[in-house]
Length: 215
Image 1 (cartoon, rainbow, N blue to C red):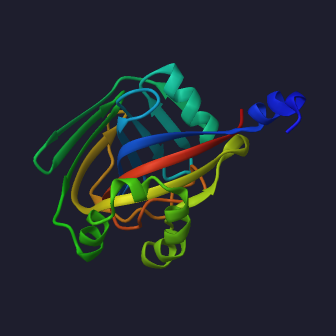
Image 2: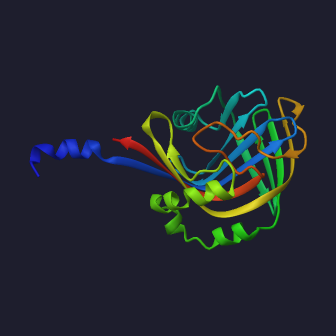
Image 3: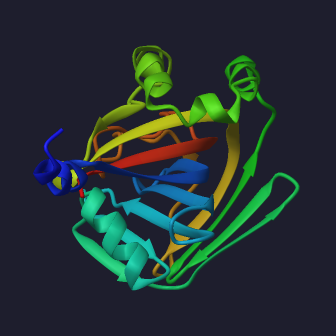
């Protein structure tokens, strides 16, 4: 290699970051759909964020810091971005979320066959983009709206490696003081990125890899 090419090669190196945690997707009878990201490991440390799509199609991001809001907003598509405290507490099978004017509580149920199968996926394998590429077609067939790889904004690419799946059986939620109604399917699919969450409300343990493009 020509020594003069070293800088160009380094600048062309692709940068990847990973987020490890949980994604919960729920629908409500009001038509509002909510997606919670609860990240135990990330480039920003542990944090949670909420993506919300109203019945009229407005897409909102509720993020805890300007830094996380800028990163998520550069990866997905939103009409409104709000920086608000996002607090999540978990007690047994009950999750309680407070994010600005959003109050959300949901209860998870027992794993089904797919959840038990995903539990057997090693963490090291779930982190590999090649594994996510392999599981993309089965995910599309089994879980309407779900994709495990695709393109994001600003030339970024993403891969999702699932390691667990639990149904969500009960949801209570309000936004800006308005009750969002009872649990419902996530219909229509949310439109923040290239794919949606499962049509049936669910909590998924996942490793998300984001390729930021050339550095």
